[in-house]
Every structure is written in structure tokens, then in C-alpha cells.
Image 1 (cartoon, helix red, strand yellow):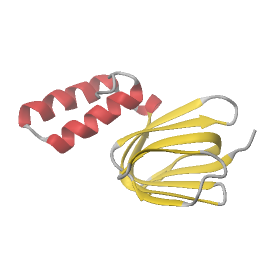
Image 2 (cartoon, rainbow, N blue to C red):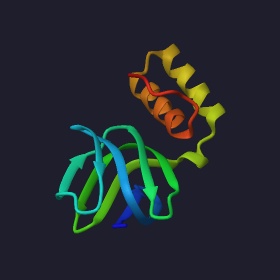
Image 3 (cartoon, one colour):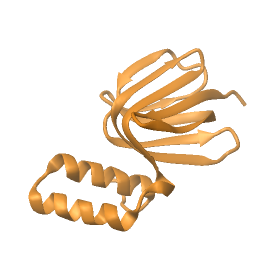
Image 4 (cartoon, helix red, strand yellow):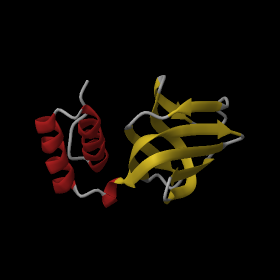
Amino acid sequence: MAELHVELVAADRKVWSGAATIVVARTASGDTGIMPGHTPVLSVLESGPVTIRTADQGTVVAAVHGGFISFAENKLSILAEIAELADEIDVARAERALENAKTEADSHAERRAEVRLLAAGGLKAQH
């Protein structure tokens, strides 16, 4: 099966790197799926979960807030302002942050908390 090389980098660290068969991320144009052989892409990332299907049939999910996504020659770079892997997210803390953001009517903080909970599997996607 064809693979692409993925680098997920936050402003402060390399979050994940490896081979994948597909990556789905939220861009300014909507949810975008990138597979090997995709046409080149350069887009702004929106806050949302990024799902990486690894070459070994695993799945990596990260909460990503802002940044850029770039794909060319089967190399995908996700350059995020903030990124956390799902297993790094403290769900109880994210739930408290969501409640505080709702109380304070802070839509940006509310979105960040919702994305963290979506990535960690603690919140169902809203349609």
C-alpha cells in the first residue's frame, strides 16, 4: 500500500512523525483528506482534530489549533500553533475549561476545549 510521510509539528515541539496512508484535517476550505499521490496542497488549518491512519493500521488523533498544512511529493507537513496528541489530553481538565469558557462566553476558549475533547474521544462531533 502506498504511504506518505507525515510530520506534525507544534510551535514548541515535534508532536508526531511517521508513515501514513491517509490524514484528515480541518482547513479553511473544510475537512481535507490527504492520501499518497494527492495534488499539492497549502492551506490554513482551522482548530479541529487531525486524524492520521498510520501505515501499520493504527490511528493517531491530535487536537490542532491554527497553523498550516502543506503536501507535496508524498510529504505532508502539519505546522500547528498548538497540537496535543489525544492520549496527552487531560479530559477532566478540558471539560472544566469548556464549562468555564461557556460561563465567560469566550468562544475561542470554548472551541479549543471542544477540539481537545473531540480528539480525546470525550465529546461527540457536533453537526
